[in-house]
Image (cartoon, rainbow, N blue to C red):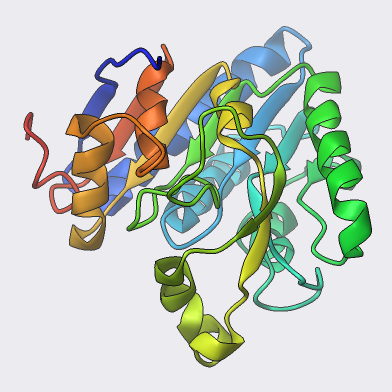
Length: 256
């Protein structure tokens, strides 16, 4: 039985306002832990939603000398198979949108490897989980939400106890990625993703969503029944979650 509770919901005037609030929280956490001589372990997301947040983090790093040298990152997912050098890869995304612009140590960056042979994936996923634990666990996990309610690539049907693994992507996910790959037939059908249980072990979770296309998934996440049909609903079992929304994404929730 998954305990149900309503997460904190913050509705801001725009996607930029959401990005600024999320980036400010992450920056404050890094500053606080740097001052205590502690590493900051971040779980990071990709896709369109966090780009503005990463731009704001870069601005803070440049203008306020935010030191990322102690920051350790674990990305949620990567397409499979996928070269890290491909412009569609999440390795490329993270370099272009964040890592190339801050002073993070390359050895502190962890993104699932899309070039593994299939026979090695299970062991690799176990090692990914172990690396998170060895780093001390994730202090703050950043999430978006898919139109179908996925978090990471935990697609509908993903159970609350899932761990890092190879998954088959939902048709909606493939359709949404089609433009990046020159059509749906070229869109990857699989990915390596952190599991729901992995995500829920983070000390703090923030989810950001903007735009009317996310409104139904957001409504289900906050007000719908908790279960595998909408994996984002599992966030309601966590005691320290904030969901940042713009008005378009929030338009269907009961509290809006």
